[in-house]
Image (cartoon, rainbow, N blue to C red; front, side, top):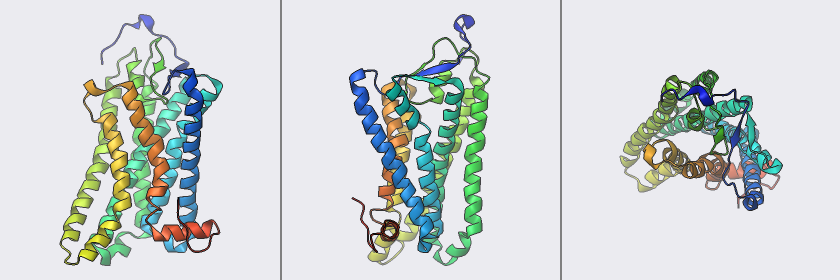
Length: 317
């Protein structure tokens, strides 16, 4: 991106989040819909965390990472939706410059952490299916903790660096962001200074947050498929694949929506299309994950039943 004329450059104290719709009659519907989805997201993921932490049978690597994924999903949604709801309620579209940068940092960090946790969970399934005799040593509690710490480090450092680099960008008088959150690419379009370093950082983060975890997931499932298809028992193959069903569903939904935003040609981009995809991966998928990981999981149903005081069985609606 070149350097636009500095004639319109100003000291920006806030931005305008245009949201999903500018029509006043749609605002009550949007407020009720997103408030309901947000409450379901937070409550559902909180129940998953409490169920896993309260049931000793679920103190395994798979559920350890699932609990952290639930925490990440709740935080990811909380980074944007409360501000959106507040803006609708107060009929104000503004977000201050510091709040925009803070929101951007948390969205990048928790979004990237979602990617890496899905990759680590794929690796966990690979070890469980392909190396069952070594599972307890290959996925020891110490190694799981180190893997989680690495995921946090790999997401926090680039997100913080990208946010700090934005503080050196000068913005023009135009300050309308055609989204319900502070989108990094939309912010760079409002810049009046050289943003080449920031654009390189966006590409680097895309490779780090999207490509690397996705390739790890693909490689894990290729190895899993080879191992399972080499099994002579059809029942054994079905059992092995069924343990990956929930994770595969979450991966397809999450990465499918992300690819709609970040991997399509620039000529196909539109603010409306990007906002719809963002709603899917920032709101809908975190809301669905507790159901995806619980509906067909007997251990989770039992743990949720005990947590809610309904005996030994529990079925989500």
